[in-house]
Image 1 (cartoon, each protein chain N blue to C red):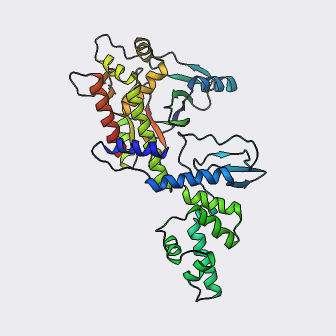
Image 2 (cartoon, helix red, strand yellow):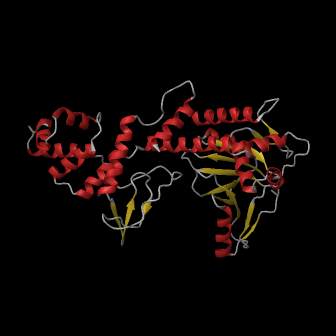
Length: 119
Length: 275
């Protein structure tokens, strides 16, 4: 089964400023009105993927995570660990039904697995 | 910064284990030497295209601002949260001891009987010291790099590069330092920011709502603070969001107090840091 990148996530130490910058620059819509208060980004285009902005801890630099769509987050996470990835946030169901896990790949880069509730 | 890391290393190694994770006392002295070198003359200029790119030896941050002696220019902004320094030019990867080894090889090609003692005499160094340096069992003092560079006809700029390379942590050490900073920051956040404890406490109450905006209002915090705390609680396996949407406290402590929560949270940080 293909595993496309379904979402991007910007982790920012100043998420409001990041939201303002990109929405001003590109006309993105940023909507935090959901139970997590997650700043959902709608680029306004059918091309590419949509994303979100999450607060980064103060000791981290700002960075971007890719969310890869999978059918089974737990299995995919286990496969990733078998390949040397490290679990950061175990499979977790989010308030609106999406399921995700965050891992570090063997080279130390974080990425997320996502099963969207709509899929 | 090193001193703080030593203390934090003690924390991460456990109260009963006095071993420091990071540098010994002599390394602090070397850090001071680096500071002096940077203040005096050690601008490392990497020519890339039409502008010069400068590397901060301590942080590896790049800046396109020139930094010449005598000019009022902004200092590098040390970002304690930045990634470990990664100096990537071939010259930089060649430590001064390798430069000395090449010099010795070069002289031996011209005269097969040329000895380490002869090189030591040329440099004005003790031959035993030079031998230890070439074997990698002894660090090269900054003053020796300067002095020997002058004798070998190495430019001041190149000598500055060797000084920085010699005293920049190797990749493994730098990565470990970075990890320690990360984990220490996690621990400090858990201890100092009440949102972590408050979220777990609230999750046990009948009126709890799994809504970060509601939690933020209840504990008088921002939604971002709640989100950061939630991320940490999930990372530390202190909280779980179940498929039903219920938030489950994973502390396993029946009578949960703030003190008990902090103790468990710190223990969890140490466990994960040790991995």
